[in-house]
Image 1 (tube, one colour):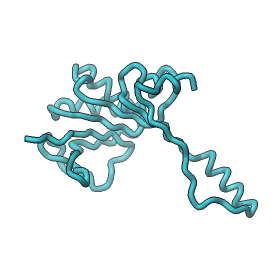
Image 2 (cartoon, helix red, strand yellow):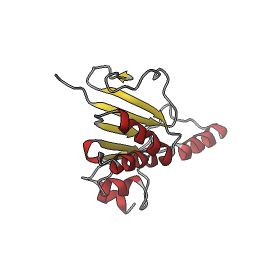
Image 3 (cartoon, helix red, strand yellow):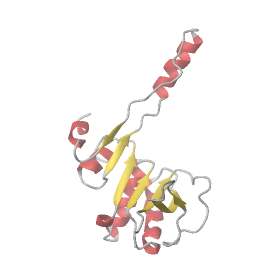
Image 4 (cartoon, one colour):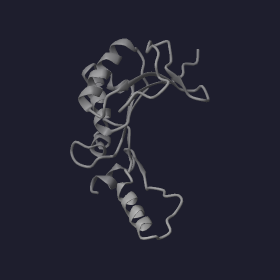
Length: 163
């Protein structure tokens, strides 16, 4: 039997259409190509402690989790700490967003092998203010603005630790 990878999502808000059971044999969401299934979605409200508590509960119910995606580094670390406490951290990969610098940030967590990857995810606040200023001055503004991002892994984390 081909088993599809089981993913757990820790989001700031529960995604629309994600209601339903979280039993190990019932996917909450399935990817369009059918290769991946999301077996649990949780609202951790951007907080590591809430993600840790949610992950503790999930680990009791689900025997197999391949990947945990969290929409910020603190939630990813909360999930990692829960899995580590249960001795299950080696069974799954943890993905964070923000690539926060510093000893408690996602970059260091990747360097320490706690997170498999984190992504630099700019907020766009600076760019929004600059565009608003141009609009106010009557200047032309681009129709599309692409913000720089980067995927930080164990292979390239050293170049980002000093930034």
